[in-house]
Image (cartoon, rainbow over the protein chains, first blue to last red):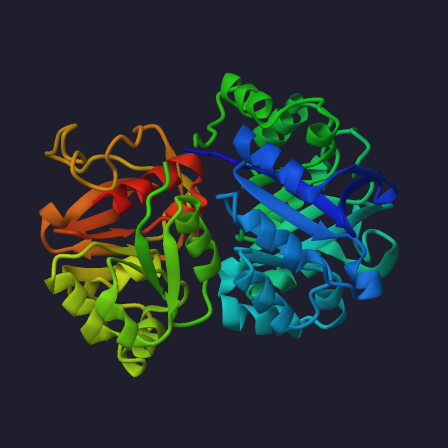
Length: 253
Length: 214
């Protein structure tokens, strides 16, 4: 049965969870531990932590946040932001993370994915893609939280990360992130056609109906939501109930 | 109510031992991560976690001389819980990357999940447990799955699954595509979960609690 995973996404800046619009104008949403505990209690299938400034400043405060989470949150945690070396990935796993996600450093040095996979296995590595639409049904990869363009074609890159061994791809639409304009369904469909690894869709959900629409039209493997939860527009049970009412399976904890 | 148990977790290579230990500490247990086999003789509850390949896992257990103390623990009828790769190592052998011998506590082998339309290997995500064929609702009564509601999903990450020789060692099955793999095993006080109870929310914690009450 098709049963998309519902992932609560926590973008981290220093000691806070933040959220902006198109990765810009970040506002403080709360403390990571409080929000993580809330979404765990609500029945999230997974937590996704992304350090939004680590790749800019080379800071690494995620280890502590993840360690704290691991002592009271018992669902999978995917963690990334600022991972540059295999040792960074191993340190996060040793702190309670289940998977790591890499973006900027992998774009700059693709073999990093292969190197991390050789230690953690494919299922331990999620390649993060920040995607922006371009004229002519083209899609471009961005790095540093949507700040810097790369000129790379997103469909070429998603195929490459699969070949390098990444076990999953997290696709965030830079255009839709935080806007509430709905998911970038066109690209998710093309991404799912291009690779066989699971695809996590992120960016743009305003209400549970957006998640239903995405799941219905793309059958993507997972969906990551942030603003909807942070601003209390809906809860995880609201999302799951909407899916069930539309004949889509959800996991029950 | 805290369960004041002494739990030893075998720490034999990079894995998720941190998360596993936190789940046991949640119940108030005293938890030791054990990287030297000498300490295992005193273990009340033993946990064998593990991620990675079967051959590497067995090789490391062998090099660190863990195999004999694990088997002694089992011979004394003390509780042992294998998680994920740790469950697979309980079997007689595996076909992952060549043939490898396992601990042989549960006769049988570990085989790759079969690719089918509509499912992806590795199997990553949440899936439910069902009572094996020809068993009834009382089958889980004295096991780690006691009082686990049948509609609850558990968290899986794996490409291989156990195929026990004897049906009585199969504790649960889980649907994957058109067929069902063995998702947990038991033999006396030895239990194994292919899923991660430490990552399966409240229902997973219930399984850990049941193990601690054995």
